[in-house]
Length: 145
Image (cartoon, rainbow, N blue to C red; front, side, top):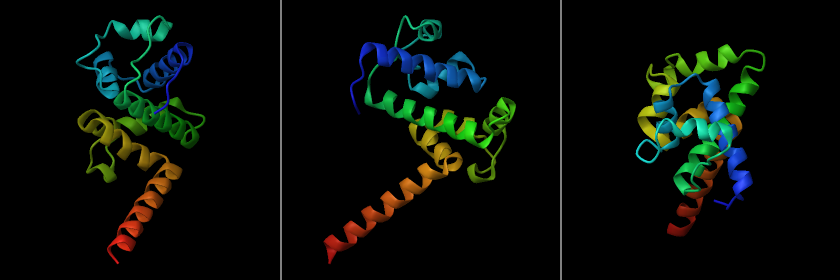
């Protein structure tokens, strides 16, 4: 993961919190999605929104940010005219998640849940993951021959 300047990280923090505000989730859920339940308090979210505090540049947090932005962008592409549909998609039970909601998968499974939801809603990301898995399997097969 790359290092961001303080200004870049502050702007990224504000954008990510804005994305999650659009998801209509609680402050506790936001911290959980970011993997910060043990590190930050819900009152820190207002500082994140205002730009007076930025998220930590830790590998896990940066991975989560990447997935949050990817999910938000894909939802905006899928439902360009309806923020209500974006929220509904996150909160409606889904057959691919064994009748669980995408948001429930994210909250229950952390980074893996974010990735699962992103693969489902962002087909280009899903294709990239699939291609990478096939390439890795092929490389492994070539090594064993």
